[in-house]
Image (cartoon, rainbow, N blue to C red; front, side, top):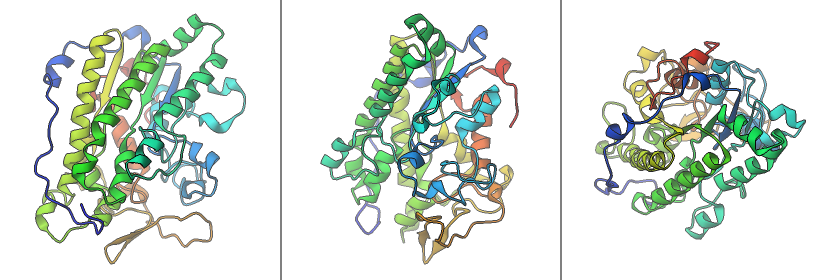
Length: 386
């Protein structure tokens, strides 16, 4: 990739060698029936999961005003989307309150049913490390390690003894990610070649692995760890790196093939890291969530899933001369054009997805288990069908 957005042919991505994933997973535990009904949710990650922390830190950011939040909340709540996010649907399936942003203050009792440490723009790696490699950060001090520090400080206020904390976390569902996408996105936008960005992958995976071990040491026993989306289908990537070479695109979807291959590289290495951690902690339910294959069927057959309005073009914003215009750029006085029916679009603003897309993904996580490996097996705990 050069600064002008063209794609440099780099051949196949190297693959980390390791045991076949499926062989190991047959030996893994699923959620025990007695622990199926979670009492709280704790979440870490970036804007895919953030329920308001970004707007607490930066109130003038786009998700802090309409049209963000227009579909379900009818007002901005700091979520990067038109309505509910995946973490909201997970909470509704489990009959729990929507998970509040951890930076929101209030009484500590507000966090007994969960806290969300995710922040829009967060990276897995510390910003200083990224900057040393010529990669800018959107915000300092919101990396995955920082979010774990916030969790560490909050935890003693939720339970008065180590035994009580262990009980709390044993009955909690932890969502660790998606995280790492911004590390790559910021590098993409800096004009760094895909060959060079590949060097970040093992570093990001190692950071996620260390965070996973950390929450296990805190006492978590049920942890969802999502992979990356098919980023070659994301409108912002399609706009930034549009190519005149038809061979750069997957003919069945119109997505940029090498960016999807990059996402698959991340996901393969992440699953190997999870397998390694499962061997160390066989009593813990470490569940990979396949965001990539959640969306590929949608890109292949969008109308089958009700997406008749737009697939590779977002609802809010749009392309002019092949360039994606922003959905909202930091103020109520900005002119914003949005589609009439966000539920018919896959993507909301060029980066994030619509509520309808998130609902579809969570159904595969919570109801039919098609996106989790091993299966979350929490069907006996589901009280709603949002």
